[in-house]
Structure formats: structure tokens, C-alpha cells
Length: 446
Image (cartoon, rainbow, N blue to C red; front, side, top):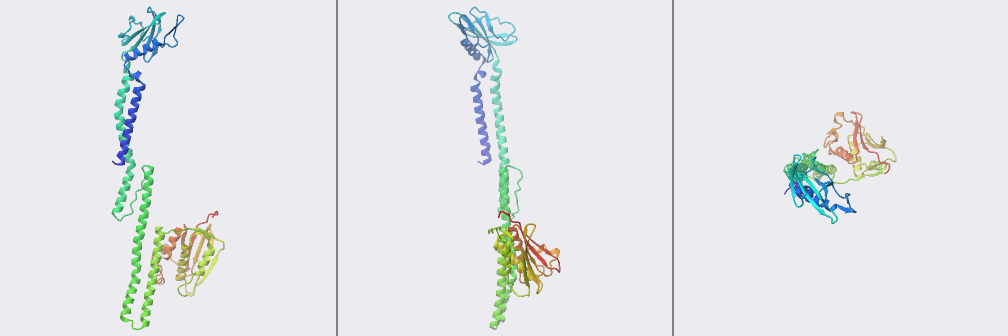
């Protein structure tokens, strides 16, 4: 049985139990009301007779009732003279006192039941007469039971119907989650989302959790797909060069120098392939979050200065490196990732800077943020291309970027996201470029 129908069955059983307990309580606690009028009349008269006391020739009326449980009680002395009591008719009832039976009478256009009881108290005696309406049970006694039996089926239907509706609405989001998960597992489309806005709070939270899981799966799938596409596209050229060089060496190389030249080309292309794969793997790991890169507050000024000292270009173009680093600046960063940012920005400035030019690395505070600036004196970047340079494998000047992988700046932007920072560029054609890595302010408590 499904959970939905188990809930409905539980509601129904609880309603039946509640109705049974309530009905039993009514029957037990209101037996005197539901009993037939003749039985109630005899019992009430007997109770009133037991309550009469005679002391020193005087009746004590304190405990004697004149009307109770729908019964009118009248008291007479031993000779039948009226002493006190209540009667339901305007005219006296012309009916002799007689003990032992319930007698029907008609008075005032209604049917009544009369019962007399004689009490012998040794010294004297007295009579108690009780009068009750013949249809007294038509009130509570004849209404409660039919009402209970007529309402019980209605309450059961309401409980079953209401329970089913509540269960259906509660489990409807779960069915949507199941359908979405099934559609995703049956195909390659990971873009489906539940986007549940209505329903029980627990189900909305579950749907939100599933949406987050689907988003992570989609990101992972797209990253894997992009990695495969990028790697296959970018590795095609160096693999073709290696194969061509191997073929040339086999057919044309005659001397040791020829073989060494071919091996040099193969080594160069292998190094390029290795660098490309490392960059792609780093990008994929950062985007997927498969590796943790904890941030800690450290001295940023000394770190940037050390990165500049360690930077050694691959070739010599006569470019000089100058620094303007403000002392005592602290920031939250991951040294491994930030060192890669510094290397990529310096390598980019060296590659695109002017021959015999100058690179200026600055560190300063701006609006509470720590700003790392790497400025070159190269040709600059047109406005239309300044956002594109952060894309994978995009190169503004392919002739000048033959030695690169086209992934350096993409990696810088991804690392900026890990640091909750910004990677931006300020550039004008012919006036060089200023790449900035802006780290957020540090909590003074840290």
C-alpha cells in the first residue's frame, strides 16, 4: 500500500474510533435523558419519595424537588390534600391517587404520564405524584441517536475525502521529483528543474535540494563535455606536428643533428601538450569544486613581492620588471592559487608587452579592497574584445600568442571566483593593459 493510502486509512480509522468513543460517552453519560419517559418517571418519583423527611410533626422540604429531569413532582398528605409541588397544567388534574402503575392522561391538549407513590412514615404518610410528557424522549433522547447515526457517514466521507486530498497534495511534489529524476536518468538533458513554489514546506525544501543536485550534475557534465571538446581540439595540432616530425625523421634525417632537431620539436610539442592538459585539469577541478582550496589571512605584500622575484621568463625580450608594493597589506587568499594568478598575469604581460618594454606590478588598497595590478606597455586591447579575453582559448593576437595555451586568463577568472574576488582589465589601444585582481576586505577580527 502506498504512503498516500496509508495516510487516508489512518485518518478513517481515527475518525471511526473518535465517533465510537463519542457515541459511547453520550449513551453512558446521558442514560437518564435517553431512557423512555415511563422509566424516568418511576425513578424520579422514587427518588423524591426517599428525600422526604418528617420531624416533630413537620415535613422538611429542603431536599424535596418539584421539577427534575422533565418530571413535575407534587406532594399530598395521607388524606390526599395538596401540600406543595409543580404541575404542568393550568387546571388541577382530576385523577385519584393510586399507587402501583403508570397511567396515561390527556390535559391541555397533550398526552401525559402519571405515577403515584405512597410513603408510610409510621406516624403519618404522604403521596408523591409525578407527571411527565408522554413524548419527552422526542427531545434529547430521540434526537441524539438519530443525529449521531446520520452524521457518522458524513464525517467518514469528509475524513476520507479530506485525507485523500491532503495526501495527494502532499505527495504530488514527490511524484514530480520522481518524474524529473527519471527523465534525467533516461537521457543526457540535465537542465530540468522542479522549481517547486507551492506545497508543504518539507517538500519545497526537498525539491530545492534536488534542484541544487541537478545543477551540480549539469555543471559536472558540461565541464566534462567541455574538457573533452577542448582537449581534443587543442591537442590535435601538437599531435599532428609530432607525427609529422616523426615521419620526417624516418624519411629524411640522415645525421645525428637531424635526429636531435626532430626530437627537439617533439619535446617542444610534448611540453605544450603537458601544459595544456595541466591548465585544463586545473580549470575543471576549480569549476567542479572537486578540490578544496582553503583561504587564510596572510601577508599579501610579502607574497606578491616573492612572486615577482621568482618570475623568470622563458626567453629574453629585454622586458624589465618593476614593483610598487605597499607594505603591510593583508588579505584572505590561497597561496597555491594566487601564485598561479601572479604567474599567468606576469607571463601574459611579458608575452604581449612591447619589446624592451617594462612591466609594473603594484599592490595597493582601494575602497578597503586589496588590488594587485600588473601593467604592461603593449598594444592594448580593443573595448569589443576586453570581455572575450577571459574565455577559453581566445587570443587577441594569435601571431603573438603562439607559445601560449589560451587558458591563462580563464584560469585567473575562475580563481577569482574561489576568492570571492574580481578579475578585470583596464586597457586602451596603443596604451598598454592593466590587469587587476581585486581581493575583498578582511574582517578586522582576523
